[in-house]
Amino acid sequence: MDELFKQNLLRLRQPQLPNSFGEALLGHVSWASMPSAKKSLPKTQTTQFSEKAQIMESLERYAQEKLGDNPAAVIKISGGEIGVKPEPVWDGIPKFTQFSDLKKELTVQEQTLNLCLQNKSPNKVRIMFVPESFRNFEEFQAELQEGFINQLLAAFTFKTAELFSRMLSAMKLTDEEVLIYPTMVNDIDISSEVMKVAGFYTPEVIVTLGANATHKILKGQERLAQVHGEFFNRKIENIGTFVVVPLFHPSIIENNQNMKKTAWIDMQKIMKHLKKL
Image 1 (cartoon, rainbow, N blue to C red):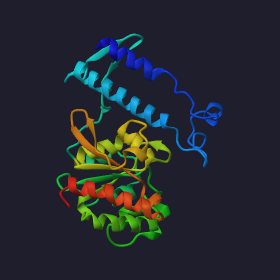
Image 2: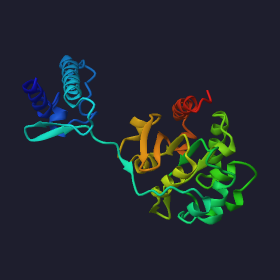
Image 3: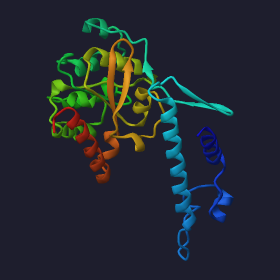
Image 4: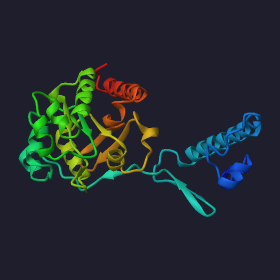
């Protein structure tokens, strides 16, 4: 079994042969490998894909068999080793029991902070939205109205805030169940503050909005197009584990009907998790 594993691994490391002159000249880019109108797709491509998939499946089964339930275990191979990549952990995040103590640690403008955290309590917040940044209070002060939209104006333009407000209403979320806090202030990364706020209010779900916020909270470089609507666990050491769900930023979906449909499907997953659907 070990020898078969090594052989399969070596086969995966071998460079893929080009399927066309365009690929040979320009590399494996999609438009270089597209078949011409007079040519059908080479049958070998399907065969190669199936063979690669089978190899990957066999390697996965082998790794699972060898590693078992021990996440710290590794498989030694020639030239390296294989193991389970541990999930990132947020450490050094203090646990606050009083809002006054938490507030001292936050760098968001006081007017905006009061706007976004007013009437929130740890036992009622169910979902925390995390955009990349907030606007300066002076920038949206003139747009303030009555109701929940005021909190959204801290993160979005008026048009986007209106759209997002309608989406939250469709999700059957109330004002007291929703909290919003950014990962950046004046181009400074304040992701740790997001986790401090999460540790205090203990939301059931943290929803990152956009690629940058997703990368910061998940501590990875996952492509948003591949992970949106998926559920991840991120642990705050000595506090607890939180569910994180990445979504596309509302500003991207407001003028795109297909993106709206995608966002709504993702939000329905969150609604089911919160037993709102």
